[in-house]
Length: 170
Image 1 (cartoon, rainbow, N blue to C red):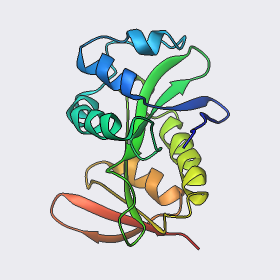
Image 2: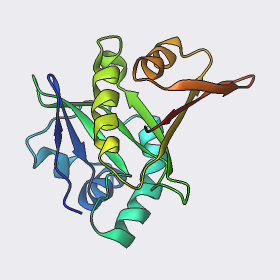
Image 3: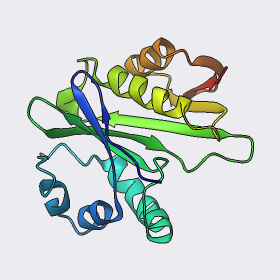
Image 4: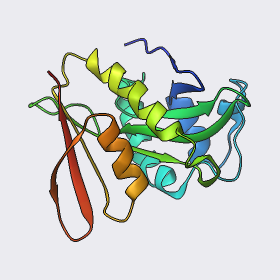
């Protein structure tokens, strides 16, 4: 699959490649800088670093990103990575994918999360193998819950810690 970047009003979503994951795992950003993109000390976040080995393993096997790894969220104004959005793997047999996203601290509360999630939901709409999009967020993360609600996800459950969300494609 030849993935294209996703452009929104203020953002560019760029699928992470094997070269980028390897570079980040080595503790450098040279592969990202080759694209004319900057990073700061706020990204990659701890959560991103936690999933990088898994993403790297997937990309080593597949060679090319499928879109179901993760995408860097770039601010168009300054070409700075402000976060990432991605999946817990490819769709399962039932066509379910789970999405997650995170923004650098200095990029929160500016509408970037909603803008990025809306864009990836449009991309998911064009993926025939996806029927249901799932997500979860901490009960205490009111901003994230608001974003999930605004893109049309419905709360389907909650426990002591998390709210579970779902969007079924029409």
